[in-house]
Image (cartoon, rainbow, N blue to C red; front, side, top):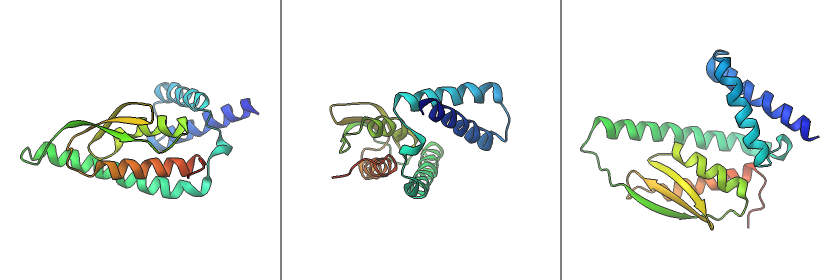
Length: 155
């Protein structure tokens, strides 16, 4: 069964690569799919362990925030007078699932004005481009979406 999960995972990542790259660049895409498969294996992500009903909400939220983050950084780059107040902050993780915590840590950098360095002891260490923005609310929403997606029992 594990071999089947690895094969399905590898095919899934190859499919994602084909969609995003217009089926080009396989010399980069195949090793990248292998790395993603290995990471998923190490995180114990199994194709069947996802809550499929949560995928649309997760993708909608994530794509909206990804676009918002890119737009915000572009605005700040083009208009230097816009407020930038960088600071290192901590975020208290509510999830106890290490898969959720690790994925959250990796994905926070794609949210508006945030970058995560690591997590330890239920604390995520985040660099905020503007510490006065409500970045914590967005990180909490992403954590909730990941918990739902990975079938974590939410208290």
